[in-house]
Length: 165
Image (cartoon, rainbow, N blue to C red):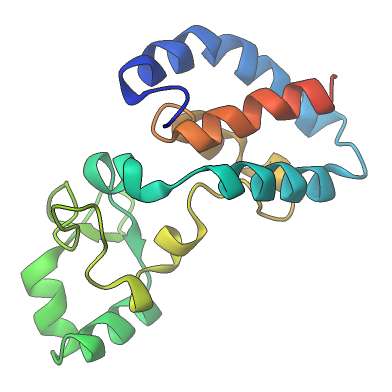
């Protein structure tokens, strides 16, 4: 069972947005030396009790960006030429990045399984990016992700308790 539920998540994230933004602004100015270790521990603990297959909200509501390496790897897996893959599944967004033509993700099945899991994009493998080195540098992304991912929400809430600023 996911806590918070997806129904509650958007409201909770919205209610906490200003508090989280202030926290992350302080974090950038005064980054604790042990931040990456704390974040890795919080991330690991959360994902020991979180089953992404119960949710898959990231796959249903957002699309990853696809690097050239992602495109090559996935196209090969699908026995397509990279340009065929691009034409069939991707578009270029306002930042000039390749992204999915639409969400939910084309490769998400009815049971929330990824049909290209073994070769999925780097952005999907790393989501919600809560175990990234130099975590303080991705606070804008994290603020967005707490509204999408219950696990990211929980990790940020635990982080504020473990690392009060």
